[in-house]
Length: 575
Ligand code: ATP
Ligand code: MG
Image (cartoon, rainbow, N blue to C red; front, top):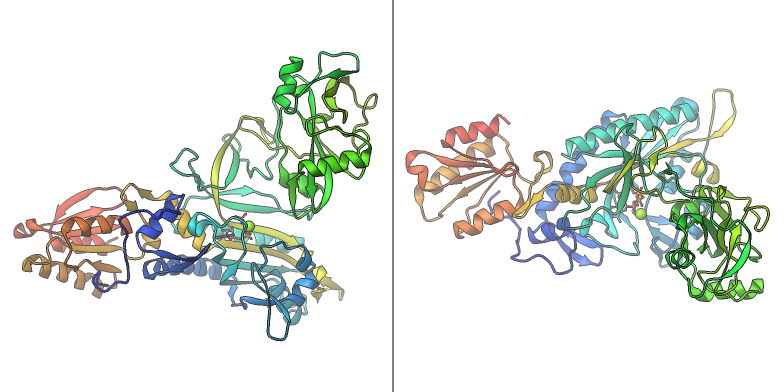
């Protein structure tokens, strides 16, 4: 392809609305253009990269025995009503009505559709296992579309769904997908970590995410996930799922007798601890949340934080937020108290479900709110002064240097971009939608399902996050839009131009994806663009051509060598 013909417009500046490098660079280098918030045009260079990722995904999915299909982007509400998700899937689900007033939605995911396909097409255990996948645009009306392709509203996903007779079959399908994913990302030039992750409220399910780790201290914060990992035993988990053991802390307070004590204006744990001159670890914190519209009180040791996904899962919820002050006021009114946030305690709360984190049950002679403003109970004990809630769970956010639950070594934390995930669904959809098959024993049974996603467009952006420098993108060879760019320094110099054309023709004939920068631009502009666009190899034909030499540059190492045009061509062909 000739740069003079290629539809690409590089920009001098980064776009003003971009926060992270992949967004900045993909816009500036002419790969994408925004159409609406979280909705992008993929221009020719981008589309080539996306097709390469798609093809790697296709090859590995096919090799793993999955079969490609394509499901509609628009889905009827009936299926979602059957699965029970029409009412619980929040505002991310883009709903619309057709001319007959029938409700539809733009597919944010395809479990319902695939389950209906299996229900119609699979009747016997003899047809199982099956794994069907597609590469398709998804639409999610994300609350905060940001970071360009990393979190769009419309984006490209590969989604696969496996159907098995039993749990053992699912385990196998899951294992096969885990292996395929590892290969896919490796082939895309991306190192990933497979980490345990939240699998929602459906008890017992298993899921893993594939994370591209990004340095927290890099110039941006593209990694939206905190990944905890153990350097010793390999345990790793998303913060929404990470479990840890704690280092020893003081949990027996200095007040040996229960006493209501004035603690004026101590609305935060730190203020309370400072005021009483105690460590936060002997305070029992009580936080009020709203889970699916219902009030929940979460008790946790004063020095620890609540992990909201874990808390939400305790109540099988879909939505969680911290309660507003007016809601706390309402709870106080209903319970006959008049305290404000900071003085709330579990005792006597009406219309509130209570859950205690594992950390609070060991507390002795601790400090706790009693729903009286500017007062706390000090020296409290479970069973004597306050009842220990019946519901006890792990709702704690792990912290760096907590002890690994597997081997007790200290945990580390880093930022990660989730590029894919695999999920044991079990019978969640097949049961709800009555999708069954006849098993060996003649019994009608629901399919045992798994689902497996890869963000195609997010993977491209993650590759840019991992591979760039101050001059631009550095594509991994396997997903670069072109492998080589031939740059004649001066388009006025006949020798330079003819050698460049010759190299270009030879590479083209050998089916190498090659660009030639034949534009009437200054050398500086052409070289800058080549770096910005991120083509892995550059062959520059300049003045040294009089000695039959060209410059061969490796974009990723920055290494430059001077060789003959023939050698340059051979070097590329030998890659
Ligand atoms: P996230 O937690 O990042 O919102 P998710 O858990 O909702 O992701 P899935 O529904 O499992 O993700 O989707 C599968 C894959 O699709 C994800 O692993 C991710 O790579 C990609 N993906 C999800 N949401 C988006 C988005 N808004 N923009 C781009 N890619 C996305
Ligand atoms: Mg999401």
